[in-house]
Image (cartoon, rainbow, N blue to C red; front, top):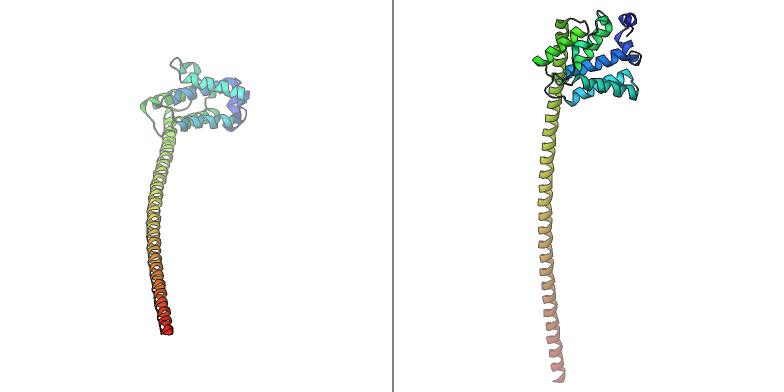
Length: 226
């Protein structure tokens, strides 16, 4: 690595030109994997953090895959962080920036276990950064992540409650529609029965009128014959 140029380079500048400092890039991703492995299990939020870091570095597909290989190597049992100390970053913006980026991803699960603290301490030594400051940064980001996770869980809880209420309302509305449909069908049947009754009464009346007309006709005929 070009020590003199890295000493004066800002972290933002390093991100924009990470592909020009491959050795530092690979070491950083190996250390990232090492610290993230301090979690009992790696969550999607941490994986998303890795993806966003790679996007910020605008790595080529080939270089990105190589960086991921170092990241996975850092999570392996055979990885020895002692071989990745970057003393030339002492006091540089890059060292602090890398630590912030790595710690931010590592505590994206909202947890800061003893194992993770130990690994952050190792990372601080590798980047020539104060261990106490590193743990303060880790606690700050952990709290932010925990708050974000709590807010997301509450959002999901509220969304689930709203969904249950919506389904409850839909069922109530469906029952009301069914009741109204039963009432409509009941009314239609009653109206149909009433029409049938009226039709029978009409037919009965017509027959009675016909019989009366027939009786009158016969009566007239008898009077005429007489």
